[in-house]
Image (tube, rainbow over all chains, first blue to last red):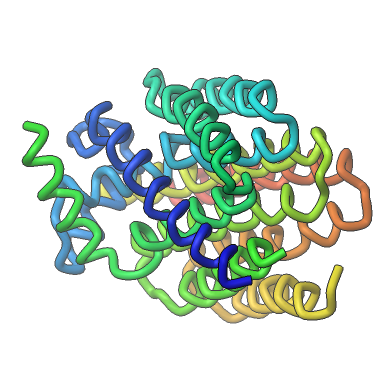
Length: 161
Length: 79
Length: 76
């Protein structure tokens, strides 16, 4: 049982690094996108957070991004291996277009996550560890402290610029 | 399976935080976490390809709903 | 489903339903309805009605969008 808990925590860290990297690479913290994301960013800033971090959190809410891609890819690998993960990537792509998002952060995250999760299942992890791990990762960004998370994301965004 | 308990616990935590938070713009990220947790729970409960479709459909649906609420909320503020 | 999981998701659905009744703000009410749907979906899936779950998962957000359209028309 302790093994599984350690695997879940490791999977959480790996998923966190994966989706934050892909999202920052695809410039999610950049202001001026979806109006809903800007509204959320403004409220987070009003609560003491950073605007660019808040914009990324708003973009995560308003459209499937790499975090959604990673979660659904992990679910896909759990259900049907690599074809399952790629099928999940297709569904994320369709979801992006339904939400009027022309970007590829979600699809890229899903495809990358499919191979990462599959590789780790060959090394002793279970795909379910990544499902729980990804939910823990998104909890740390969107569900604990918006102020601290947005400031951390803003600092990472400054590194990219 | 421990993963399912972890996900259910996070879902309960996120649901409580959504309700307790007063500001709409800050409620939506907590609702997003709830959407993630329930999508994961759906797949962990039933190990079947259609469960993946259900999880994806629910996740895209909840994202679209949050997007609509956020855009309408933004539209109101701008006016 | 194991009892504690049923209790967890049932609690989410209950919290969503009660807060939808008590919260005054319209956006808060709509988000609470979303919490309610999130709570009942695992029950539907657990019984094996996956196609019903897919249908509910697609219809509930569309219903929310219709409600938003009505609310915006009343506001304007």
